[in-house]
Length: 220
Image (tube, rainbow, N blue to C red; front, side):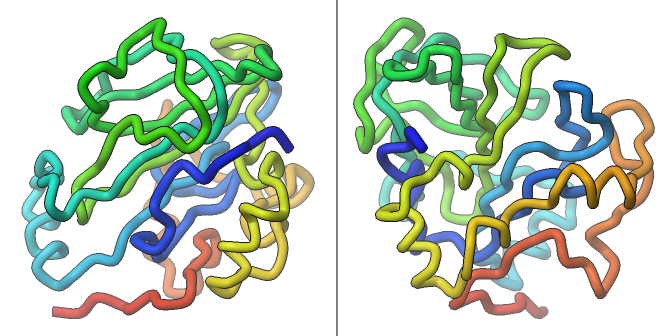
């Protein structure tokens, strides 16, 4: 459990997808396929946000007055900053100083000035931001990159002192955020390439997202 700081202002977040969920797109490796082995963190949406996004628009760049701050969760080095498939921020790769076989990947981040490849960062240091109605995702991997990488849930690496903030938002255990490999293998998803074959999250009984206390169902 080498995570030293939470990577986001948790009080701005209301839902988090589970490890091995059907959220987003296929993000798997290490012998597992057709599942998302990362966590999507989503802020509270308003009715205006829903109308805006249903029109096909992407979240705007963050306004410093309302932006959600992003922090390095570990002491480490920025080993890469990559573009995204959609033009919403950058993907940051942070290699752990204590456990260099592990790399934390943060998605759709707008890095602060001075945050660049090769820069050393410390746990809890603000390194970027996202807009007030924009989600972000986090993945932790070991064993390099490509299909041989092994993904691990962010929450399985989080010490009790940090996880206590999630418990204060109504979460019982780390298992609340993790779908086991055995369950996912027994209840497989369908994929077309990197995309899920159906909108699983539109099911009214969908349970692969954790709703934190304070969540409000957005309505027009």
